[in-house]
Image (cartoon, rainbow, N blue to C red; front, side, top):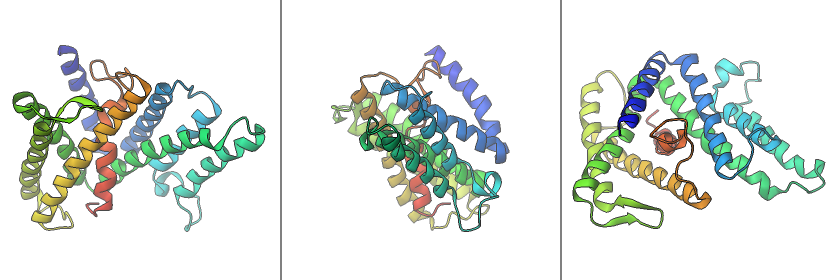
Length: 266
């Protein structure tokens, strides 16, 4: 427990200033985190990231994270970074030809999916900061409030298992506690910053969206649990002592921010 607290404090001490500064700092940080996430998924599947498909997958994630305006300004106006990402897909598919079918389309599917999962999640994290610091913290607070509420309520009142085949410790009561916690935090946050930030929707609609974001965040956590259970590992990595890997800490975020973007919050 002490190790978890120390790691959390150190991580926040490093992370908060980067979030506040934004710009290149958060873009580079997000790109590095995306590469680490790719590494952790390759590691769970017992694949070496220092390989053709590993490097291509990591590059694909970075291409998705970094904004065109700053990093790929030399591209034609009608070309976006998805076009660059698609080149990595073509390279992976082309490997079947070069290897004389020793490398197949089935094998190419994993690195493509991995780079999309990590790249798009951290891409929208960066996009939210590009919109405003207020919007970024709105998303983070929903994730944090959901986690804390689910843990506290589940620990105190949890009786009915939510999805025991995937995550035996999660309960229905905890999930509902997480949603309620997120809605309360979101309501207070929006009321405080409503005059400074246009959330794009009325307060009641934002709170309805918050329920959806909280559910999506918890589902993202379950997805990560399902992946780990499939590969037979306890944690996605050990980069954060007491907390596991990057995916263990960012699994909800990788689902929530893309859905926030889809709903027009940023």
